[in-house]
Length: 417
Image: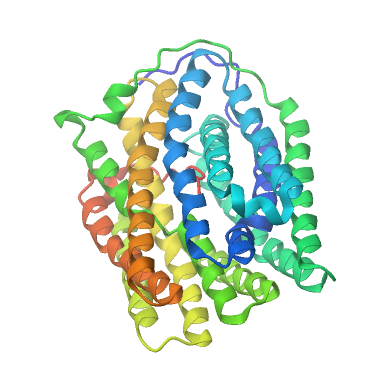
């Protein structure tokens, strides 16, 4: 596999990319657990929340593919900055609309889908470009610490702001304003990212429709559909459940912070012990913990049960996601004819992932119409997501890069939520 010309020397801007990731992560986690709650509070109807995220998941892969084309034809820096700018626009609109935001939930979901497509196409490319095979473990270890600390502190700060502000609406507005300012700061810092204007072909067909000679990539694409829910969907589902149980934004923030602490500890342990030889074992135990958590949520439901589920999910997520993402980039390196093709495979992977998320949300809407209480529908869909990971394990464990001494270095890129 030969490298194409690029203006970016690996590792020369890694510190700046880490700083940009830090700005994004803090801004995102200030709001991630609260946007769904904000829409729910405005209408007291879970369907509004589902429609917002359904629009998000439908639109994201379309614009991810378009952003991938533009980054190959023109400049990936433009794609990344546009993603940051659209994040600021999204939260700026939430500020402007205020209590009327739930009336525009679908349109806002479409805007966020466009935003995600552009941002993650740029961010994942940067994370790949500023590292080498030898440095990626360290780079993503530092990035995991940044993400984990942000997940511990940011939602707690948001919960306190919303909970202790005299007006709940003004509390949400303060949190959204903080996110806008952080995204603007990231745009300013992105000036230091070198441009890469070398045009390249965008050969998406082979990545999107792999042939028999790409058996590993076929399995990666199939497994993507089973991975819906572990990262982003669980975030807003658990936040909704906590709010439905307590009616307190502060409790949502504390709950998210506790999950962040569990995730830090699990990520640290996984990073210290994971290698090509034990990826399957790591994924197996993560899957087992997640399925056990699903069984727990189906029993007698209490606040303690919900907290325990959130803890177990946070422990299981790094055990599954870290080896899965490492395997995925190893396979991309095997399949891509040259390193510049990495965006084509990264973008293609978003399509089955989005399909899995859309099907899961559609099932949630059906369960909500059938069952008497929204809480029952959310608990049922969380069990479904947990059980899905048994199929994910069966698919990923069949990939040649999943285990063994010849699996190559463990490589990971920072996933879209």
